[in-house]
Length: 92
Image (cartoon, rainbow, N blue to C red; front, side, top):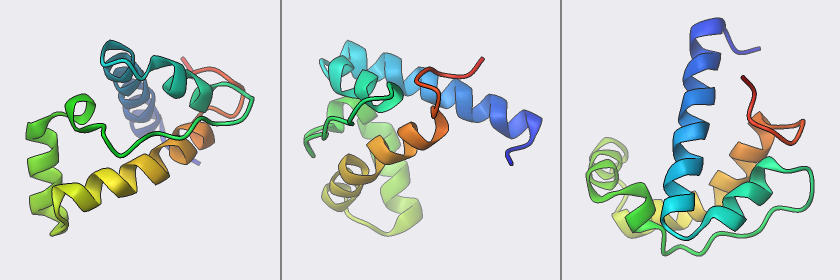
């Protein structure tokens, strides 16, 4: 179970991610992750959506190349969003 402050951070993060994906042309795929139907796959070309600053920080913190991070995010992010939105919408 996620605690109050952590739950708010997760919800805020999901909302922000959805906004970024929508603004960068990946809104349909991102909406499928939240919805109750099947999840659309995300192509590894999401660097603009994630942003170069965030990629640089994640790369430094994980020791992974940016290419590997993008590949992993494209595989794992849809499932993570789906897990935190089991009712088909972002919790409030």
